[in-house]
Image (tube, rainbow, N blue to C red; front, side, top):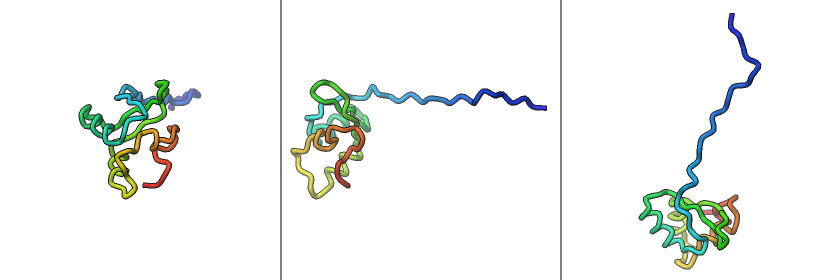
Length: 93
């Protein structure tokens, strides 16, 4: 005979590493890609002028943006994030 506990099974919480490189949202895409390459990371945590997190951006997202026909070297991370962490791109890539 097996005993069944009335206590639900525990759920394992996975720690997310939020200690990645933090950069200001006024950084250009080109500089962000250089920072990622130099730091050997796949993403950056983006903060506004008040050091409040506005989201994160991946190297793959920036590479897709840079390969697009509307890309210019004046695009800043804040232009991509639009001040919201919900969607990293306000437009379709």
